[in-house]
Amino acid sequence: MKQYDYIFTGSGLSALMTVYEMIISEKFKDKTILLIDENPKNENDRTWCFWDKENNYDHLVSSEWKAAWFKNENFEKRLNLNPYHYKKVKGLDLYAFIFDCISKENNITFIQQKVVAYEEKVNYCTVTTESDHYNCQFVLNSIYNPNDVIQQNLYPLLQQHFIGWFIKSKEAVFHKDCATFMDFSVAQKGNTRFMYVLPTSETEALIEYTLFSKDLLPKAEYELEIKNYIQKLGITEFEIIEKEKGTIPMTCYPFWKKNTKNIVNIGTAGGWTKASTGYTFKNTTKKAKKLTQFLAEKKDLRNFHNRSKFWFYDLLLLDILDQHNFLGSSIFSALFKEGKPSLILKFLDEETSIWEDIQVIWKCPKKHFIKALFFRIF
Image (cartoon, rainbow, N blue to C red):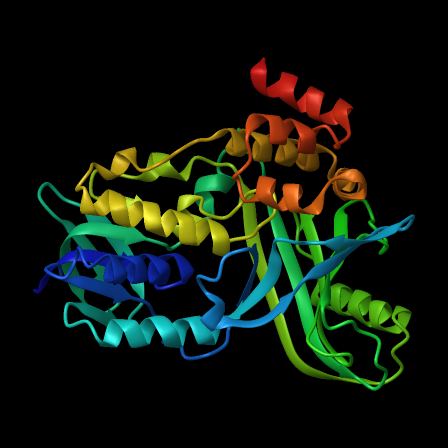
């Protein structure tokens, strides 16, 4: 049985970005690294979007927007994102880039198998697949187990769930340089529901029907709302080029408590998803850098976590939406109607000072946040 220094169980975004950071750091060339995933990562199975003012991943960006609409039933506002651009990366482009980097490293191996278990022993860890067993010193696990969150009630769990159609229309109704972050003009039906639009030309766009709520909907309900929205845009004829769907857990559950000395949970399984928005790409790139440095310093993996003020802000929002799911539209509308877009994005990237935090939070409806605060304190 071959012994490895590091084994990644799963090779999603968090694993691939961490491996990439390990490669470019050049501190792990003498370490053997194994990635195990049942998916060969040769299909465009997802996209990631993020706002950014740097150029670190521009070679992977397929589309970007300088502005974005925010809308509800009462107002609409075109947000100038400067100095940020909103960017999209296709899954297949990222997979191809990182696996090309991996192919040039003699110490990194990828195996297409399904992981069924992993365990820490006295002096080593074991990873079991449907066909083999592997030993290693450290396991980096990105296989999410929803039961950890479902079987407790201290930290609420919502889902960001969506279905999207990439369409080509007869009418030129889209503005290529302006996305739609949130359009709350759709019926809320007791939830937080909005449309999300990413145009790539005047006649082509991804249109997604998205919810922040506890329960998923029947497929037909998402697709009916998309059809209605397309008609509302003034489109009479269109073809569907691609479809996508997804479910992203939104929770402040302390996943790091599941870490051991030699096993660390990463990605969704490690709480790397931004709990209040469901965004993953930017958080993952930051966490991957920190974890790579942490591994290079050979520290106890139980100490890899940082519960910041932003974790608490996210928890308050989730507490509100857990109890009063219909309030999402009013909270986000208050934030974007009067708030400065660049400061809001900086806040959501968890890069603001306390004074900047106050400027953002003060725009939100105060009564519900004060009640949530008292609930958490007492």
